[in-house]
View (cartoon, helix red, strand yellow):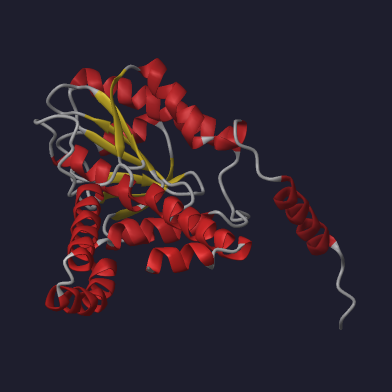
Length: 285
């Protein structure tokens, strides 16, 4: 009867409402894809739908009452369970706006990439472990504060010195901030909790690289101390067994997105208008 009533009252406005809700739910799923919470989210949805269907078909009043009262508990538990994914979703939503914050120019980024590639090649030959984080739009200030402040230019010699096994700074991450400076070394990064790791012998350094890529949009270059292999992490995923040529190609495509993904036209126009406004002399005394 309820289904017949719903079909009889189905209007174009109701169809639009249903479509928007479905589109919203479909968009939310993109934030959970490739994360460790996919199985948990899938199991939760299947369980809830199963309980609801069984209670409706067999008219189980006690089970329906329990289900309805559990909805409040679930609404409170979801932000706690999926806190990393919700945080990443909010950060991505914030980054979808106007990106007019100061970033390192493209020429400087190319120099940084060349320095990282040269250093990574020598580190891989020497079997010296390394963890280099490249900040993009997400703030890494909370992780920079855990390390030793450097505020230095990025050079192959400095990276080789930082990750020399007998130095005090080699055990941790070197973070290159949005200005193109090595903001800190020996920084502590969050470890991934994912069970879908690319290999059984993935160590702490690779787990930290995956962890920082899960909570931010940063890039991370990893050199394995055991095998000397070079890897890159981004968005909770790892690309392994890279040579210098492939590493350079990946960093050029991900660290300099303006080459392939220019800012929208309205964003460029607004940036130009703000620049003109700053250049206009003030008439106030």
